Image: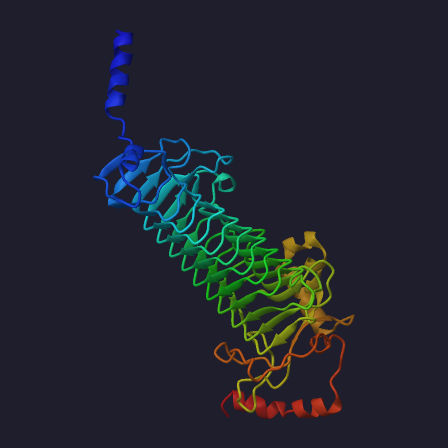
Length: 448
């Protein structure tokens, strides 16, 4: 009876097995279009000829927990409107929803879930990955696969994808790619570059990930108009750079992060400049964190608002003033605008007092923002025992976020020596130009 039961169960399992999707692919001529009947089909599937496969939102391909759901070993194929699910769990073979090993392919409007990796491109160029919804297997964050992975791949367009609860989106050894209008949440690195030059990142929404965008050893990257929020935790940061040069960071909103911007030996190449312009960096623990006393960054027209610490320098660095700070808005600026030109009448100056302890002594960071350090900081500001270090000096601070606009047409950057004004005093003529009637200014601010 037991033997009969096992035979009956095996017959039932075979009768309910999904039909092979590979058979449909093999029966379709190169250059043809395959529109399968609605239903669930068995993978994995290997496509080695150019095809257009349209699931019309009614077709599921289930890999049965083995390998990648679809492997594209061809040029010029299109996969759209498919549900791809249940890949294997091997990191060695990069089990994915779609493995791309060709050029000029289009992967769009698919739902990819319960797969280790989402879409993996290796040595592939001129592909379009657009409008897909991707999520990983329900594993611990560190062992999930990457939602989208580019390795040695050029001139691809990764746009309009929705990513939930995957690990990272990574771009390694890849250049001239566009990453735009993607929405990623619940992961580790929203976007991670390594050794990847001249990529453009625009209009993405990255929220509730451990890190927003991190750029390592990747020169010439442009980050424009991205929204990055709630990158929290011990290593949380909105945008970070390590030994990266000639980047343009403009129009981004970096909100509610442990650290807004993080700069580690960047720019790295001699005589290169990183342009950080017109960004909103707000409500974060640290607005801008320099790993050390470095130079070569131009921060112009940014708005720093609601950060616990606006600028910090760790690693024994004394100042961030060797970089250029121009026409930024600082919500803790203590000055007036008597002529009402939306430019502060005196420079914005940020000094380090007792709160410097948590920068120099890592173990003291636990007490950052505590009442004890706040009281110590207040007392030292009231009657300093030593000369404090000037961290930042912005000669023309803006009086509002609206006024913190880019003014490159009228501004000619000075030399590195001009940017570093630590310890320098103003001339008597400059002091006369900045002198004003404090009582009159107070009455005007009260409307009297």
